[in-house]
Image (cartoon, rainbow, N blue to C red; front, side):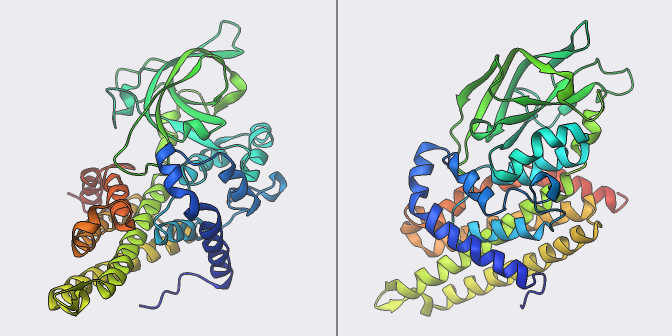
Length: 385
């Protein structure tokens, strides 16, 4: 189906990103996967393109109130090439909105110009060993000093994406004890420079997929954080954490449908060239039927995502809308990519073929940003169940 969600400006940006990927990423991506991280300079190059300044006011060096569609295009083009931008989406798509929404003017002047240029990348540290999705169980503490000039941060985090390549980390820590009727009270957001004394990197975690994006453990040993680095109000951190979830889940949906579309293209190319019993694999009825099913699934998911992109532009994307998009698109991606890998036969299991990378990278999409089961709970609640 013809897509109408993008205009000429969007498509010109797409051409720029596609060219950038072909020149700066694809030739080196296998090495980056082996290193389990992209080079830090990738982000300054993206900054030169203006791709790290979406949403940042022009006075701080950004692109202003840009549509999320530009970030969606970056995801689509990365999936098309079966590569990634490291933790770009985490920094610009997930963490930056917290700064834009919660930082005061002084904080914005300190942090946003560096983010806009790509010189400052962001990560967020929520998950802890033993807590998982139960953020109310966070044990990392940030105690206010007697003179109220700084917090002293102690604790540990795990599954932290992009910390090695970040200059600032938004840490979720407990600044007050929970109340009897609200376990979520007492959490705060602190912006912590990653070169702070006592800010330590733990194990580099080996993942099934997304291997060019670093994931690690963090620990904090008496890290001194100035009170000026408190983001928003003290003890209200939990309420802030849910504010960006609809767009985060829309982003995951974009990634899902884009990966599924890429898988169909890779499979179509492969079965057209590959011959079995003297005939192209594409000539068999089963191949045609499988690809027809996959293409139809992708079209349905694409329509859902495109509607979500429009709603986001209008400021009308609800939590339930985003949950439906994430649930459907990630489940479609799982089915489609699996079928397309099967059409590759044994070669589909080899990492030299992009379908194998898509298969491994996509699995986590049904887990992070809220599991499929959590999405179903949100949707059912929206139905009044």
